[in-house]
Image (tube, rainbow, N blue to C red; front, top):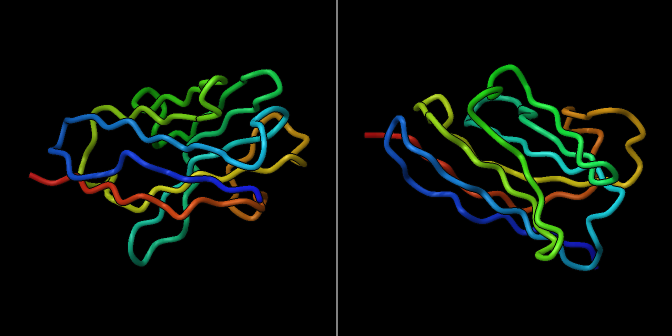
Length: 126
């Protein structure tokens, strides 16, 4: 059974950093598009970054470019999202998603992904 489990969320002060993890089970993260999304209360789910595990190419939304970094650890079957310079506007539930049938350079629309984790809360507050 294909599962994605996020971890690493929590409370952080403005300007701080967090690293989120997304560990896959039931499948190997080869030839998948893996995306990170977030959803704040009352807002739509926002695509942040994605990685094409066939060639490890990455893509970032303008809202996080230069602050967030997506990466992959093959041995752990895990994808990370390193988040720096966090602001209160980054407060949201963060989700990872995967799909093996995205045949394009990048995908940041939530409806393009079939497999989702349960989410992890990130709160940026002093």
